[in-house]
Image (tube, one colour):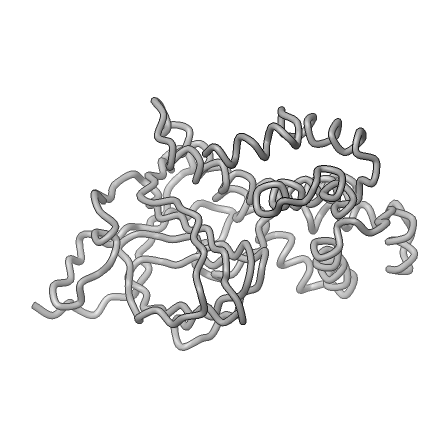
Length: 301
């Protein structure tokens, strides 16, 4: 039976206390260049690019994503994903709904069979003032803390220890909140010449975390007073410059420890900590375990 004409995604205005996300799938993937079939989902998906690049066609638009970005895919919306990097890409995918309403027992249950569409299965997007729907502008650059929460969620969902559902729900609420809060900084960056320049500076810091990024040197580059620069940076990035730098260095260190065989000293140098003892202290303070223990634990898992 053909589906009646409906505009997707479907949404529901609700207070934040009614958000109770259910997690259906969370996984890290390494994919070679390829083109996936055009499809629709019954639930939502966050697709984060850890390495490589992705092209997504959706709503007659093309979105090209590079490392460090994610796309918010909504139920009922046709889309097609393509891995367009020259080599393998590493992706992190999370399927969820906002109210724990979807019954998903297999990965196939997330995909719409166009020969037998079940309209009641399309999940609703929660919308709460003062934020805009996450689906409104689907491409995001999540903060280092948000990326860390996504990685933790994948770990919890994979290991499935007692109580993992509660942990995943809490992490998902934090992830969604972080993305919603980033809307303000994105609008500020678009509406301000200084904001756009700081947004580009942030992108540069992401690419070169080992650089000598002092408040004084960055403010001078922006031709701004240091205090004004720090205030504007915080409004856009959600944290002071020094804290942001530490967070991206920690994120990059975790990635290198997981994905390379470089020595602990070499990893520290690559993220901006040439003193191995200082690097170890900083990493342990952030992660709760030493770099060596982190690498060993990750490889066991």
